[in-house]
Image (cartoon, rainbow, N blue to C red):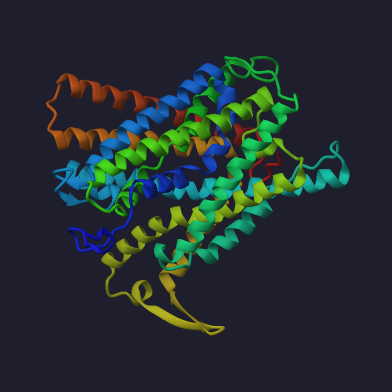
Length: 458
């Protein structure tokens, strides 16, 4: 029988398999968070750093497999499909947890747009700094403000944000995914070239050394904050059901997704260890927050890497922002169904192209992009902001909700051995997330105290 033309139980046709799901996982995970892993390794040292990367990946594999079993309700093989993460939380855990999950999920989506604005501006500034150093020499003062680049990036997002829905962005998402692999491979290659040439820096099993430039207290804060950077790199909980919804069955979606989780997370972990270990070995205690910040030669290759980052951030920003836009607009439509301001589209013809202009969408999305850009300009601290975003998502989205859904699905008895073990995992991961959040907020506040607002020049 030809499965390609079969309809699934909900009348839709799906053609995905284990390998396409694996590709989606790797594409989603390989992102801005990878750039900060070398800095995280430098703070933690060889032993704790490597163990942390492997441990976060192992916990993620376990909980993502639990999420895969909850794709259908109540039975993981024959139950009704849950098309979104929040829908699964609602049917398994009820309305209150659904609301809490929504607050966490959409807060993170909104926050990531700030992080991506910072990431893109660091790459744009890095290109400008490289040009300055080439023209004026490596001793020249080429410190550059991120603000003009953030404004430029925000202006581009103002136009892209007016795209009505997520499906229109497939081409942009595909281009962004390709460039993500480009800059990660370039970063690995650049670090490897430093080590092969014998120019690697001294390292330590305990990470950055305490001394005149780093107090013991700052060392602890940085180490805790770095856990958030690792957590961010492991997170694809927000899109796991979108990936599962592409899978053709039989075999069951959960069975295929578990294989994809194993393959994808294993590949991801190898890439993470390469980036973090090679980066730390190349720069030692001076490892930059964004690994590309440590390279200026060969100029053309570093520039290509930075351009790949910028292209990726342009697409990734919309991939994260569009679901947030959609939920706000659905809420507004439900609250004011008769409002022309919110619901009416006005067709406008520009150069033989007809654009449907919606006033509410135009004004609200513009305000959102402006706020995200201003926040990025006020807090342009790459590592600390990414760490905060990673910590916010890991404990609740990657661990807590999957574990609670599994307990509800399997009707695990309270205070049984398995229940206690799962709740212990919950508590430990939520504690780690809380520690990383506190450390990230502390680091951001310290930087805000140290540098004049809107005047940061690295």
